[in-house]
Length: 388
Image (cartoon, rainbow, N blue to C red; front, side, top):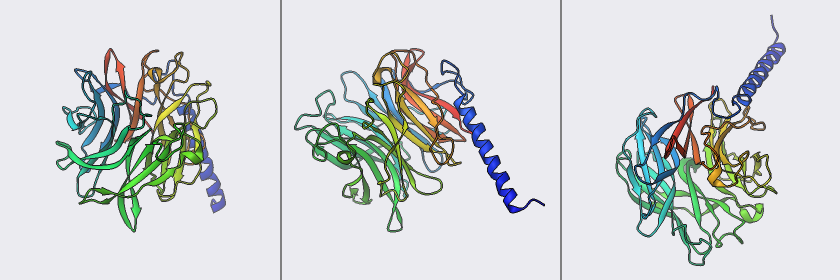
């Protein structure tokens, strides 16, 4: 009869073998051109192709009851940007777009969703002065706002102004989640703030958050700081955070404190979602000096691994966002110390981008979403990635 010590050793050996096989599978998934992988379940497919203008910054969210929201920025020449949403029950067939927010005097972008316990849906987004005007001017206005839907996403109304700044710099890129406070779950929104009201120069940026203090009055709390740009000497931005299956929280950001690289992708964790003092650590740095990796998105997988997407111009001839592609990496295990080589869901040619993307776990697969051009059509494109 096998003793307990032998049994534990056998179990550890099996776990290690599984990890090694998984790592080998992931690291060798790409063909040379990055377009075919054993991880990809079929080709990319379109969720939204605008008849006029373009679409970017897709964000997916599943409601109680199974309806899936896909929100995005919609831009048309000569008009202010708008935030739109489409819905689906199966990730294949999508509704006609519904307007979430548009202003005569502000540009909107960077949508994020959360559903409250009462069933109301909030959509957060930035609403700022025209970004074509220099945001470093003294009277630049920026805000994070929320709209609400009380009919499962069929219509939307203004809900609240979460935070606003006037002066050089501004607030951007909200992302929702739930924290615990006094034994109850509260909705929190994290965002980036490079306003000179809170940092000393435009090479610095805070990651801040507020929570929904009074649901009926639609009021938000004071500001909490998750990452202080003055202390980190970094323009920490584009925060995406999530609760881990085993407890605690994870957050990914783009950071500027790695010499030789405009942006790199970093990760940190928090036991309670309030204290983010654990130092950030790099999880992706481009191989080529001067290249950047940013706009990350993280999804915890059921087995404890993490999937992280980001955009990078690494390995491309031209440099810049206009030539960046979405990449996805996976942690080899739940320690998140070792990461796979990137896979490329949308292998667009030089001079074309697949940017401002996200990943979404649904029905046992991971969906990559990006605004890009495929087959001559610009829009929101999806691709299914197998994660088991």
